Amino acid sequence: GNIILRTNRSDLKRTYRGPIIYAVLAALATTAGIIGNIVIDPYNLEYFAIYFIPALILVQLMIYRDYVLEAALKITKPFPYIYRLIEPIFDHVISPRILLFAHHPQKLFRSLEYIQKNETSRNITVVFCKDKTENTQLLLDKFNAYLHVFKEANVFRNLTIDLVVEDELSFGPDIIKTYANRYRMNRNNIFIGQIHHTHNFSFEDLGGVRIIQ
Image (tube, rainbow, N blue to C red):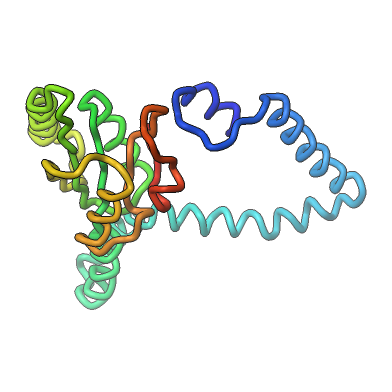
């Protein structure tokens, strides 16, 4: 994971940096420890499987619970009582708002695609912060055009997407705090593109938001 991050996100601002050999040695040490435990007692692998397989199934159900519940709704449609029990649970899973702070329209598709694949919520608000140093109207026009195409082409059929334009606050810790309070949401439901070296704040200053590219 560290090696992939170093390769794919070389421009990502980091608080700490370490030589690549450290990541390689850590991976080798972990692998050696796993093999050593199996050699010491082969039953360790059996016990591991007993816990790991049910845990893996449970994690997968949690990750894809929106699709599982959606399928359950379709199956139970002929049974109104069961359907009414599942429906509020499904609504609770897909309704929480996700904020996506986006600045480059070209990355909008990849960001929304990531959210669709990895999040259960289907209520997305894209926040665009105007920057006086750039032609923000051109960027805003592109955002509107892209979102229009996505809607017309039914690209993200499960997502409800709206665009909010921020005229006053620039991107940083203050705007993250403002929007988190405005929508009464946890910051782990706030996504950003990335932090560059030109920003005068670090990832920790944003208070637990999530970075996607």
